[in-house]
Length: 408
Ligand SMILES: *Cc1c(COP(=O)(O)O)cnc(C)c1O
Image (cartoon, rainbow, N blue to C red):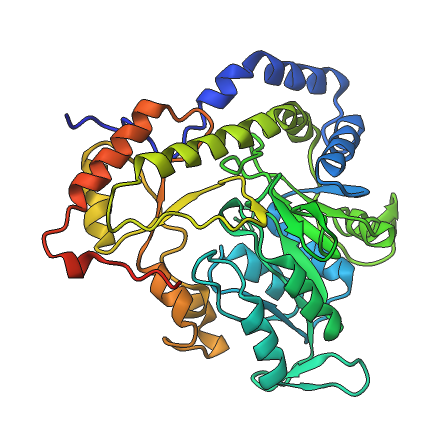
């Protein structure tokens, strides 16, 4: 029965085969017009992606990391300040904060959604910070720095609970930049506004990554900032292009962080399929849910009624994870861990001075999370095989040892 890679963790070949002619045409056109950086393909994609996200502006940049960094700088985060995010995210979130000259600080996540816990955010701002009399912003007692922004991350394709996060931010005069790098097309039902809102349209600005494995992926590196703030969008355009508004007239020092035309053309073609692909991911999630219904010891993703997730990743929790992962691997099933080491415990952040035990929820789930194969082309037979293998290997020998402990 063992077969190499029967069900890969990710399939990046199939979606491109479907589109091969169209994508090659993009490349041909770019060669013939020699418009490689900027130009009409980039502008057209920016318009289309802004429309997809329900925002007025979209600025294409070189990567998701560029997008978070430029959004923070353009929104007004200054060197020497602090920015709050979660320890359960990809390091690009905090790299961008540091590269903007700020210091990352963390608050723990909600155990059910794995995203920022708004109560813990509020508690942190109220109990661990003083208020700066001039700006009204919190000053972190931990770092002595002014906290100027919050970066909630819409991890795994599900939005953070934005109503309370936006409310806390407003009360403390903080900028909110969404890290939507895993959440293209995800939606959030705002009770406050009584409507569904798109990921990327809720903060002052948002960052998207088009890394190949994301729900909308380029055939190389790419990213984008979305916003409804025209001045912020203009600033990002300048930042991505060496600080120039007009060629060789530099208003400031910027970066080389532009989106190239070939990637924009490719993204434009794939964007037309994104809604369908996201719907297919949701269907696969539903199939997993049905197939797993009688399996014990596997905690499935929690989908609150206020989210419409796009399942960038399908993350379950199991005890004895490495055993499970090895068994699945032997059965030809690829899995991933997003992420095995919380950021506050990474060597790169030793200087921040955090310790084990500082963020108990993140630390606990980091030991149990397992990402199963999830992509639009995943077949039902593959899913049946994943579930059968996981059920088989997770069969309780010692019941008590196997139970993960869901919070509520
Ligand atoms: C992928 C990702 C990024 C960074 O995007 P790149 O395009 O790889 O620079 C940032 N944040 C999160 C949560 C991501 O998943």
